[in-house]
Image (tube, rainbow, N blue to C red; front, side, top):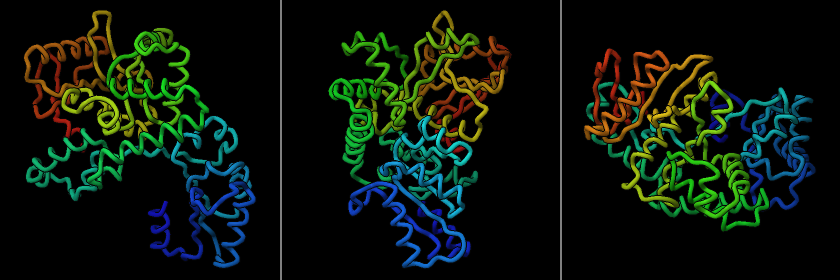
Length: 379
Protein backbone atom coordinates (compact mmCIF):
# COMPACT_ATOMS: atom_id res chain seq x y z
CA UNK A 1 0.00 0.00 0.00
CA UNK A 2 2.88 2.35 0.76
CA UNK A 3 4.41 1.46 -2.60
CA UNK A 4 1.11 2.30 -4.30
CA UNK A 5 1.08 5.64 -2.49
CA UNK A 6 4.64 6.45 -3.59
CA UNK A 7 3.73 5.49 -7.15
CA UNK A 8 0.83 7.95 -7.11
CA UNK A 9 3.10 10.72 -5.80
CA UNK A 10 5.64 9.96 -8.53
CA UNK A 11 2.81 10.32 -11.07
CA UNK A 12 2.00 13.81 -9.82
CA UNK A 13 -0.65 13.26 -7.13
CA UNK A 14 -0.23 15.74 -4.26
CA UNK A 15 0.92 14.21 -0.96
CA UNK A 16 -1.97 15.96 0.77
CA UNK A 17 -4.37 13.87 -1.31
CA UNK A 18 -3.15 10.59 0.19
CA UNK A 19 -4.25 9.24 3.56
CA UNK A 20 -2.85 6.04 5.10
CA UNK A 21 -4.42 4.57 8.26
CA UNK A 22 -3.34 1.46 10.17
CA UNK A 23 -6.14 0.27 12.45
CA UNK A 24 -3.74 -1.81 14.52
CA UNK A 25 -2.26 1.45 15.83
CA UNK A 26 -2.59 1.12 19.64
CA UNK A 27 -3.69 4.78 19.89
CA UNK A 28 -7.05 3.81 18.41
CA UNK A 29 -9.27 2.53 21.21
CA UNK A 30 -12.90 2.48 20.05
CA UNK A 31 -12.75 0.85 16.64
CA UNK A 32 -16.04 1.70 14.95
CA UNK A 33 -17.39 3.72 12.01
CA UNK A 34 -17.48 6.87 14.14
CA UNK A 35 -13.70 6.64 14.40
CA UNK A 36 -13.42 6.27 10.61
CA UNK A 37 -15.56 9.36 10.11
CA UNK A 38 -13.54 11.30 12.70
CA UNK A 39 -10.26 10.33 11.03
CA UNK A 40 -11.59 11.52 7.67
CA UNK A 41 -12.86 14.86 8.97
CA UNK A 42 -9.59 15.49 10.87
CA UNK A 43 -7.59 14.68 7.74
CA UNK A 44 -9.63 17.13 5.64
CA UNK A 45 -9.41 19.85 8.30
CA UNK A 46 -5.65 19.71 8.73
CA UNK A 47 -4.46 18.66 5.26
CA UNK A 48 -7.05 20.45 3.07
CA UNK A 49 -6.82 18.02 0.14
CA UNK A 50 -7.89 19.31 -3.27
CA UNK A 51 -9.26 17.07 -5.98
CA UNK A 52 -9.52 13.28 -5.84
CA UNK A 53 -8.39 11.70 -2.58
CA UNK A 54 -6.80 8.26 -2.17
CA UNK A 55 -7.49 6.57 1.17
CA UNK A 56 -5.52 3.48 2.21
CA UNK A 57 -6.87 1.55 5.22
CA UNK A 58 -4.73 -1.27 6.61
CA UNK A 59 -6.12 -4.02 8.88
CA UNK A 60 -9.60 -2.60 8.27
CA UNK A 61 -11.24 -5.80 9.54
CA UNK A 62 -10.46 -4.61 13.08
CA UNK A 63 -13.22 -1.95 12.79
CA UNK A 64 -16.79 -2.99 13.59
CA UNK A 65 -19.10 -2.19 10.68
CA UNK A 66 -16.26 -1.03 8.42
CA UNK A 67 -17.90 -2.47 5.29
CA UNK A 68 -20.95 -0.19 5.57
CA UNK A 69 -18.72 2.88 5.84
CA UNK A 70 -16.60 1.76 2.87
CA UNK A 71 -19.71 1.11 0.78
CA UNK A 72 -21.10 4.55 1.62
CA UNK A 73 -17.80 6.25 0.70
CA UNK A 74 -17.70 4.36 -2.59
CA UNK A 75 -21.31 5.05 -3.56
CA UNK A 76 -20.97 8.77 -2.83
CA UNK A 77 -17.65 8.79 -4.76
CA UNK A 78 -15.93 10.63 -1.93
CA UNK A 79 -12.56 8.96 -2.50
CA UNK A 80 -10.62 6.15 -4.14
CA UNK A 81 -10.32 3.38 -1.54
CA UNK A 82 -7.79 0.61 -0.97
CA UNK A 83 -8.41 -1.67 2.00
CA UNK A 84 -6.30 -4.53 3.30
CA UNK A 85 -6.25 -7.12 6.03
CA UNK A 86 -3.80 -9.83 7.02
CA UNK A 87 -6.35 -12.62 7.31
CA UNK A 88 -9.12 -14.19 5.29
CA UNK A 89 -11.95 -12.32 6.96
CA UNK A 90 -11.77 -9.79 4.14
CA UNK A 91 -12.54 -12.52 1.61
CA UNK A 92 -15.47 -14.12 3.40
CA UNK A 93 -18.82 -14.85 1.78
CA UNK A 94 -20.33 -12.01 3.79
CA UNK A 95 -17.92 -9.50 2.24
CA UNK A 96 -18.84 -10.66 -1.24
CA UNK A 97 -22.49 -10.02 -0.42
CA UNK A 98 -21.89 -6.59 1.13
CA UNK A 99 -19.59 -5.26 -1.59
CA UNK A 100 -21.00 -7.07 -4.63
CA UNK A 101 -19.75 -5.44 -7.81
CA UNK A 102 -17.78 -2.84 -5.87
CA UNK A 103 -14.50 -4.58 -5.20
CA UNK A 104 -11.55 -6.35 -6.80
CA UNK A 105 -9.79 -8.94 -4.62
CA UNK A 106 -6.05 -9.52 -4.63
CA UNK A 107 -4.62 -12.43 -2.62
CA UNK A 108 -0.96 -11.88 -1.79
CA UNK A 109 1.21 -15.00 -1.45
CA UNK A 110 4.68 -15.15 0.08
CA UNK A 111 7.52 -14.34 -2.34
CA UNK A 112 7.85 -16.22 -5.59
CA UNK A 113 11.36 -17.45 -6.34
CA UNK A 114 11.85 -14.59 -8.81
CA UNK A 115 10.92 -12.11 -6.08
CA UNK A 116 13.11 -13.96 -3.58
CA UNK A 117 16.09 -13.60 -5.93
CA UNK A 118 15.43 -9.85 -6.21
CA UNK A 119 15.39 -9.63 -2.39
CA UNK A 120 18.87 -11.19 -2.54
CA UNK A 121 20.23 -8.83 -5.19
CA UNK A 122 19.69 -10.88 -8.38
CA UNK A 123 17.59 -8.81 -10.77
CA UNK A 124 18.61 -9.72 -14.31
CA UNK A 125 17.48 -13.02 -15.82
CA UNK A 126 19.04 -13.16 -19.28
CA UNK A 127 21.00 -16.21 -20.45
CA UNK A 128 24.39 -14.79 -19.57
CA UNK A 129 23.28 -14.02 -16.01
CA UNK A 130 21.83 -17.51 -15.60
CA UNK A 131 25.17 -19.06 -16.57
CA UNK A 132 27.36 -16.80 -14.41
CA UNK A 133 25.05 -16.88 -11.38
CA UNK A 134 23.85 -20.48 -11.52
CA UNK A 135 25.77 -21.57 -8.42
CA UNK A 136 24.52 -18.58 -6.44
CA UNK A 137 20.93 -19.16 -7.58
CA UNK A 138 21.09 -22.84 -6.55
CA UNK A 139 22.38 -21.82 -3.13
CA UNK A 140 19.51 -19.37 -2.71
CA UNK A 141 17.07 -22.09 -3.82
CA UNK A 142 18.18 -24.21 -0.86
CA UNK A 143 17.43 -21.31 1.48
CA UNK A 144 14.10 -20.77 -0.29
CA UNK A 145 13.15 -24.41 0.33
CA UNK A 146 14.41 -24.51 3.91
CA UNK A 147 13.25 -21.14 5.26
CA UNK A 148 10.34 -20.35 2.98
CA UNK A 149 9.59 -16.98 1.46
CA UNK A 150 7.90 -14.61 3.87
CA UNK A 151 9.53 -11.23 3.04
CA UNK A 152 10.74 -10.46 6.57
CA UNK A 153 12.22 -13.96 6.91
CA UNK A 154 14.03 -13.58 3.58
CA UNK A 155 15.74 -10.41 4.81
CA UNK A 156 16.49 -11.44 8.40
CA UNK A 157 19.11 -13.60 10.09
CA UNK A 158 16.62 -14.55 12.84
CA UNK A 159 14.61 -16.75 10.51
CA UNK A 160 13.37 -19.46 12.84
CA UNK A 161 12.43 -16.98 15.58
CA UNK A 162 10.32 -14.96 13.13
CA UNK A 163 8.62 -18.09 11.76
CA UNK A 164 7.74 -19.30 15.26
CA UNK A 165 6.33 -15.85 16.09
CA UNK A 166 4.26 -15.94 12.90
CA UNK A 167 2.96 -19.37 13.85
CA UNK A 168 2.06 -18.21 17.35
CA UNK A 169 0.24 -15.11 16.06
CA UNK A 170 -1.61 -17.11 13.43
CA UNK A 171 -2.82 -19.66 15.97
CA UNK A 172 -3.82 -17.12 18.63
CA UNK A 173 -5.25 -14.30 16.50
CA UNK A 174 -6.45 -15.82 13.26
CA UNK A 175 -7.67 -19.16 14.61
CA UNK A 176 -8.34 -19.48 18.34
CA UNK A 177 -9.64 -15.95 18.85
CA UNK A 178 -11.60 -15.53 15.63
CA UNK A 179 -13.27 -18.94 15.62
CA UNK A 180 -13.56 -19.09 19.41
CA UNK A 181 -11.95 -22.49 19.61
CA UNK A 182 -11.85 -24.13 23.02
CA UNK A 183 -9.80 -27.20 22.08
CA UNK A 184 -6.58 -25.27 21.54
CA UNK A 185 -4.27 -28.27 22.12
CA UNK A 186 -6.24 -30.39 19.63
CA UNK A 187 -6.11 -27.62 17.03
CA UNK A 188 -2.35 -27.14 17.46
CA UNK A 189 -1.80 -30.89 17.12
CA UNK A 190 -3.75 -30.92 13.85
CA UNK A 191 -1.81 -27.94 12.48
CA UNK A 192 1.49 -29.64 13.27
CA UNK A 193 0.23 -32.83 11.66
CA UNK A 194 -0.59 -31.02 8.42
CA UNK A 195 2.67 -29.05 8.39
CA UNK A 196 4.57 -32.31 8.92
CA UNK A 197 2.73 -34.05 6.09
CA UNK A 198 2.81 -31.45 3.32
CA UNK A 199 2.56 -33.17 -0.06
CA UNK A 200 0.95 -36.32 1.38
CA UNK A 201 -2.49 -37.79 0.84
CA UNK A 202 -4.83 -37.46 3.77
CA UNK A 203 -8.40 -38.14 4.86
CA UNK A 204 -10.36 -36.94 7.87
CA UNK A 205 -10.94 -40.53 8.99
CA UNK A 206 -7.21 -41.41 8.93
CA UNK A 207 -6.42 -38.31 11.00
CA UNK A 208 -9.24 -39.26 13.38
CA UNK A 209 -7.45 -42.52 14.15
CA UNK A 210 -3.99 -40.93 14.37
CA UNK A 211 -4.82 -37.90 16.55
CA UNK A 212 -7.84 -39.35 18.39
CA UNK A 213 -10.03 -36.46 17.19
CA UNK A 214 -13.50 -36.91 15.76
CA UNK A 215 -13.71 -36.68 11.97
CA UNK A 216 -16.21 -33.82 12.36
CA UNK A 217 -13.72 -31.83 14.47
CA UNK A 218 -10.94 -32.51 11.98
CA UNK A 219 -13.13 -31.33 9.10
CA UNK A 220 -14.22 -28.19 10.97
CA UNK A 221 -10.66 -27.25 12.00
CA UNK A 222 -9.35 -27.98 8.49
CA UNK A 223 -11.90 -25.52 7.10
CA UNK A 224 -10.58 -22.89 9.50
CA UNK A 225 -7.01 -23.51 8.32
CA UNK A 226 -8.07 -23.05 4.70
CA UNK A 227 -9.92 -19.84 5.61
CA UNK A 228 -6.74 -18.25 6.97
CA UNK A 229 -4.58 -19.54 4.08
CA UNK A 230 -2.46 -21.77 6.30
CA UNK A 231 -3.05 -24.93 4.26
CA UNK A 232 -4.56 -25.96 0.93
CA UNK A 233 -6.18 -29.21 -0.15
CA UNK A 234 -5.72 -30.57 -3.67
CA UNK A 235 -8.42 -32.88 -5.06
CA UNK A 236 -7.90 -35.99 -7.14
CA UNK A 237 -8.76 -35.63 -10.83
CA UNK A 238 -11.90 -37.41 -11.91
CA UNK A 239 -14.69 -36.72 -14.37
CA UNK A 240 -17.06 -37.89 -11.63
CA UNK A 241 -17.68 -35.27 -8.93
CA UNK A 242 -18.63 -37.92 -6.36
CA UNK A 243 -15.33 -39.75 -6.88
CA UNK A 244 -13.43 -36.46 -6.53
CA UNK A 245 -15.09 -35.72 -3.21
CA UNK A 246 -14.65 -39.23 -1.78
CA UNK A 247 -10.96 -39.60 -2.71
CA UNK A 248 -8.12 -38.61 -0.34
CA UNK A 249 -6.79 -35.09 -0.82
CA UNK A 250 -3.23 -33.85 -0.86
CA UNK A 251 -2.37 -31.24 1.73
CA UNK A 252 0.03 -28.33 1.14
CA UNK A 253 1.21 -25.47 3.35
CA UNK A 254 1.40 -21.75 2.61
CA UNK A 255 5.14 -21.73 3.35
CA UNK A 256 7.84 -24.40 3.59
CA UNK A 257 9.64 -22.36 6.26
CA UNK A 258 6.65 -22.91 8.56
CA UNK A 259 6.82 -26.64 7.80
CA UNK A 260 10.47 -26.75 8.90
CA UNK A 261 10.06 -24.49 11.93
CA UNK A 262 6.97 -26.24 13.30
CA UNK A 263 6.83 -29.63 11.59
CA UNK A 264 9.43 -31.95 10.11
CA UNK A 265 13.17 -31.65 9.50
CA UNK A 266 14.41 -30.13 6.25
CA UNK A 267 16.78 -32.75 4.83
CA UNK A 268 14.54 -35.71 5.67
CA UNK A 269 11.67 -34.36 3.57
CA UNK A 270 13.18 -32.20 0.88
CA UNK A 271 11.27 -34.00 -1.88
CA UNK A 272 7.90 -33.17 -0.32
CA UNK A 273 8.97 -29.59 0.38
CA UNK A 274 9.91 -29.17 -3.27
CA UNK A 275 6.49 -30.53 -4.27
CA UNK A 276 4.92 -27.96 -1.93
CA UNK A 277 6.89 -25.16 -3.61
CA UNK A 278 5.74 -26.30 -7.07
CA UNK A 279 2.15 -26.32 -5.82
CA UNK A 280 2.43 -22.74 -4.52
CA UNK A 281 3.94 -21.56 -7.80
CA UNK A 282 1.07 -23.19 -9.69
CA UNK A 283 -1.33 -21.35 -7.37
CA UNK A 284 0.31 -18.04 -8.31
CA UNK A 285 0.08 -18.89 -12.00
CA UNK A 286 -3.54 -19.95 -11.57
CA UNK A 287 -4.29 -16.43 -10.32
CA UNK A 288 -3.12 -15.17 -13.73
CA UNK A 289 -5.01 -17.96 -15.53
CA UNK A 290 -8.33 -18.26 -13.65
CA UNK A 291 -9.60 -20.75 -16.23
CA UNK A 292 -7.08 -23.32 -14.92
CA UNK A 293 -8.15 -26.12 -12.60
CA UNK A 294 -5.49 -27.92 -10.57
CA UNK A 295 -5.61 -31.60 -9.48
CA UNK A 296 -3.46 -34.62 -8.76
CA UNK A 297 -4.03 -37.89 -10.66
CA UNK A 298 -4.02 -41.45 -9.41
CA UNK A 299 -5.26 -44.67 -10.99
CA UNK A 300 -6.48 -47.94 -9.53
CA UNK A 301 -2.91 -49.33 -9.53
CA UNK A 302 -1.72 -46.40 -7.37
CA UNK A 303 0.26 -44.81 -10.20
CA UNK A 304 0.30 -41.10 -9.41
CA UNK A 305 1.05 -37.80 -11.14
CA UNK A 306 1.57 -34.87 -8.80
CA UNK A 307 -0.14 -32.11 -10.80
CA UNK A 308 -2.64 -31.97 -13.63
CA UNK A 309 -3.68 -28.63 -15.11
CA UNK A 310 -7.13 -28.70 -16.69
CA UNK A 311 -8.44 -25.88 -18.85
CA UNK A 312 -12.14 -25.90 -19.68
CA UNK A 313 -12.75 -29.58 -20.48
CA UNK A 314 -9.22 -30.46 -21.58
CA UNK A 315 -6.15 -31.55 -19.62
CA UNK A 316 -3.47 -29.04 -20.66
CA UNK A 317 -0.39 -30.12 -18.73
CA UNK A 318 1.02 -32.99 -16.66
CA UNK A 319 3.75 -32.24 -14.10
CA UNK A 320 5.64 -34.75 -11.99
CA UNK A 321 7.99 -33.67 -9.19
CA UNK A 322 11.01 -35.87 -8.41
CA UNK A 323 13.92 -34.26 -6.59
CA UNK A 324 16.41 -37.08 -7.18
CA UNK A 325 15.83 -38.76 -10.54
CA UNK A 326 19.20 -40.60 -10.61
CA UNK A 327 17.96 -43.76 -8.89
CA UNK A 328 16.85 -46.17 -11.68
CA UNK A 329 13.88 -47.54 -9.68
CA UNK A 330 12.64 -44.04 -8.86
CA UNK A 331 13.04 -42.93 -12.46
CA UNK A 332 11.13 -45.95 -13.77
CA UNK A 333 8.31 -45.45 -11.27
CA UNK A 334 7.89 -41.74 -12.03
CA UNK A 335 8.00 -42.12 -15.81
CA UNK A 336 5.66 -45.15 -15.75
CA UNK A 337 3.01 -43.12 -13.90
CA UNK A 338 3.47 -40.16 -16.22
CA UNK A 339 3.19 -42.32 -19.36
CA UNK A 340 0.00 -43.94 -18.09
CA UNK A 341 -1.58 -40.51 -17.46
CA UNK A 342 -0.39 -39.27 -20.87
CA UNK A 343 -2.11 -42.25 -22.51
CA UNK A 344 -5.33 -41.62 -20.59
CA UNK A 345 -5.50 -37.93 -21.51
CA UNK A 346 -4.07 -38.19 -25.03
CA UNK A 347 -1.00 -36.06 -24.30
CA UNK A 348 2.35 -36.45 -26.06
CA UNK A 349 4.36 -34.15 -23.78
CA UNK A 350 4.86 -33.88 -20.02
CA UNK A 351 7.39 -32.53 -17.50
CA UNK A 352 9.36 -33.88 -14.56
CA UNK A 353 10.75 -31.22 -12.22
CA UNK A 354 14.08 -32.33 -10.71
CA UNK A 355 17.03 -31.15 -8.65
CA UNK A 356 19.62 -30.75 -11.44
CA UNK A 357 18.86 -33.22 -14.23
CA UNK A 358 17.97 -31.48 -17.49
CA UNK A 359 17.09 -33.32 -20.67
CA UNK A 360 14.36 -34.11 -23.14
CA UNK A 361 13.77 -37.81 -23.71
CA UNK A 362 11.62 -39.77 -26.11
CA UNK A 363 9.94 -42.60 -24.20
CA UNK A 364 7.63 -44.90 -26.13
CA UNK A 365 6.95 -42.17 -28.66
CA UNK A 366 6.19 -39.52 -26.03
CA UNK A 367 8.33 -36.55 -25.01
CA UNK A 368 9.29 -36.10 -21.36
CA UNK A 369 11.15 -32.91 -20.40
CA UNK A 370 13.32 -32.99 -17.28
CA UNK A 371 13.57 -29.45 -15.87
CA UNK A 372 15.64 -28.30 -12.85
CA UNK A 373 13.41 -26.68 -10.22
CA UNK A 374 15.21 -23.34 -10.23
CA UNK A 375 14.82 -22.99 -13.99
CA UNK A 376 11.14 -23.93 -13.87
CA UNK A 377 10.46 -21.41 -11.09
CA UNK A 378 11.92 -18.48 -13.05
CA UNK A 379 10.56 -19.54 -16.45
